[in-house]
Length: 251
Ligand code: XBP
Ligand code: MG
Image (cartoon, rainbow, N blue to C red; front, side, top):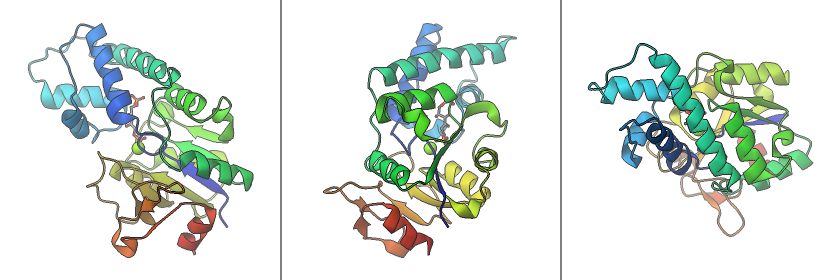
């Protein structure tokens, strides 16, 4: 019996990475007088590491051997990340990033049907509430019984920990829930927690390995702009992800 839907945020609820997080990181780097600049292709490579602080450290290690780390480098990264969060949440408040196709429709249907909604993401909690408030509804954060986000578990995706934490908070078994993800790190985390998972891809994740997904789709679809199914089991299928369609996939 399906009781809850658990959503990833970045790339799944909204296309936040390329035109949201990436320019927010760059604005923070400029603010601190650093010559770091993450263009679109480089950011695609950096997305292999989840978590903004972890991603900045990975960038320095992998791409900036020339950069002399100060003794308090961890503090600097934490400060940069706070600045980045400020830039990012301001962008959201200015209405910068819409939800992806079909997301609001499915959330509304699930709520009306009495299903529980939850979030499981590696992004900072403030980013989640800002997105839900400004791009979903003024009371958007209240639609979700559990928002599992950021550093509440030390091991970020692809570790399953954030999903395990969300399931514990929900008081539900994985078999009673369905996850929505957009990336390989995401589905490794959700599948690692035993969750069946629907994937909606984006430009950064088209080529990822989604082994074990219930379905891999272009998006959730809207009337007039249906999803395209991309996985071998249903390639070419089109439609809308609604509860009726979900139940046929779960059976
Ligand atoms: C999202 C992330 C986050 C965001 C940036 O991954 O990896 O780090 O890119 O947000 P997922 P923060 O969609 O798999 O949860 O800077 O707040 O970490
Ligand atoms: Mg994601």
